[in-house]
Length: 109
Image 1: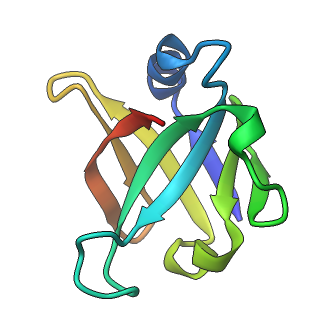
Image 2: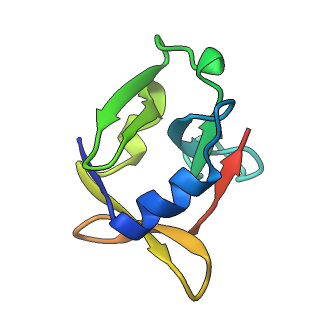
């Protein structure tokens, strides 16, 4: 999997990070979506001690490492980009063929 992060998106993520929430995860959130195959991609910043390395796969990007749940990797494309939309103050996850989430949040957990 290839994941890139635009400079503006990296800047916005880094501004949200602190010493307690320094790991970036790209999640496929299914809670409240009806079933396990219906979900929405979100960014979460978590504490490194809360990362179960057996459940996550590290993806090196041009800006920072991002961790993705191994069990949910099938819901993502082989090539993706995380961008930031300043007018909407939100992130966007896209691939060459589609926008996976046009208004992606970045939550601190």
